[in-house]
Length: 526
Ligand code: 16G
Ligand code: ZN
Image 1 (tube, rainbow, N blue to C red):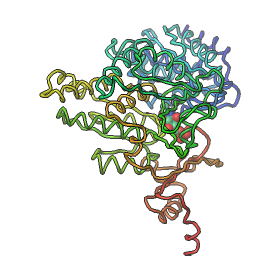
Image 2: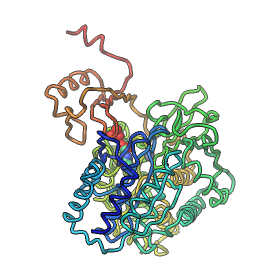
Image 3: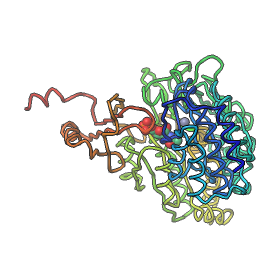
Image 4: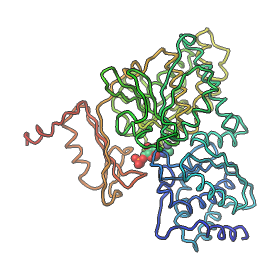
């Protein structure tokens, strides 16, 4: 048809580099920014098709998250603010890899297979991070959208979770909130202030938190939300992008993997700090003690803090909602043991990648999910939200009324569409204030097992195949037996290998109750 001719004409302006094949992986497409123009254009096209198919606004986010500044990437956001449904990932891959002369055929196939009616309305919401390449690349997305004569709205510089929030608001008639960045600030800050007002020392103590903005979009947005917080939280922002490079020696991924302080942040002993990643969908906390030792509070510690808090509130209001925590293989064994044995909260393990955790968490009235790397949120079922809303002002005691109000505010404060560094940070800060917890006290809830994470370059990472939520390998033969052999000489030990979904490497994880190697004894024994 006529539309597809204009698609091909504009496509010539965003030519695909010969021989480049990419895959829509765990977090969309991700590679060097200079190789992505055709992908952006084509994702603009795909977003329009997805919008027509779902009869809803679809999001396109241009970001490469925690990856280096010269990289970029793109992912699509589905109507409820969720990740693109898995069945469409292969359409994305096919479209990105099609030769120029195949483009029309690939598009026609998607339209046919999904029975898309091209006359239907469509609208795409676009967002981008602060990378130098993002502006230009997001214009290529616009070009794709325009080639199919679709409506769109460019929200410009936003965090990934802000775009997810906006898409969800747009498709729920504003029931989730006002579909603007300002609406997001208002929703979150109102809930935060109401929560913090419940803390015992709210009048006396100013809570000071140091934030490493990873020189990215999160820093920009922290500056915007701060005036809304009415001095209920005093923030000190570092790595705000004014000198350093994005994610360079800083940010949540650096701090988690290196297990050390980021550069560019001034840390006094005992002071609470946190790091965002490059698109502000991850957060980790940390502090240094008086002996200069570094202590990390990762996604597992955050999941524990939040789920404990919610469970305590549920007991106070006498609501029988089922709550579970969803983790990945990377979750520290101590966190799993604490949640199951002490908190009596059921814990489930999902494959790496937000979509897997999110999906599992949807099975419960309240599903708390966090990856150890700091990506996570809390999902409340519709039934849970309704039960909580009905109890407002109906509590038997003052304490129960307060607890219901707090639950309602937790629901407003948490970004249920996706993990969100700003929203998670505000919830954590509110919980610490309400419980009068210092960061040390939070850290002492349980003690992490020492652990290490490495990446190994191999010829073909796809020869490794895993099962049991990536905790065991089934291929190549013999590998799992070798791992078992090494692990069995240590207490509380666990190790696994898995092919990365975002890089051409194999990841290796190990933990045990000691960092001292028994390798020597092991050899002596034989
Ligand atoms: C992506 C995922 C993240 C996961 C990471 C694992 C999303 C939005 N992001 O960044 O959740 O932890 O990939 O990467 O799903 P890996 O497969 O290379 O270890
Ligand atoms: Zn991210």
